[in-house]
Image: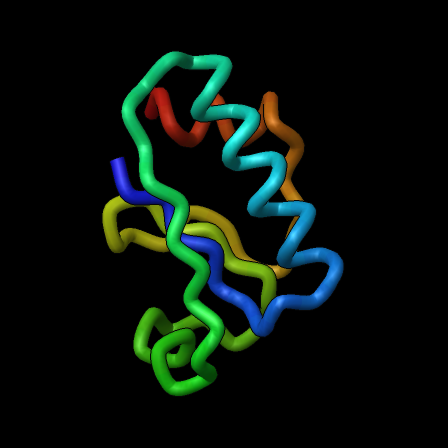
Length: 77
């Protein structure tokens, strides 16, 4: 599973990455965290507000720092 954090590296982006890693670890699924920091690449996802969360290339959340519990729901979905 490829979990992409869409953002420029701000504190909210870092927290979302931390929460995503915790969620994937707790679920015991194989995962890779990829930080997409290039504005052009972020815009290709259609994301205009960061942080964004994408799973396997599909945007799941925009403009929010999801909790590990919320991210687990997204990853299971």
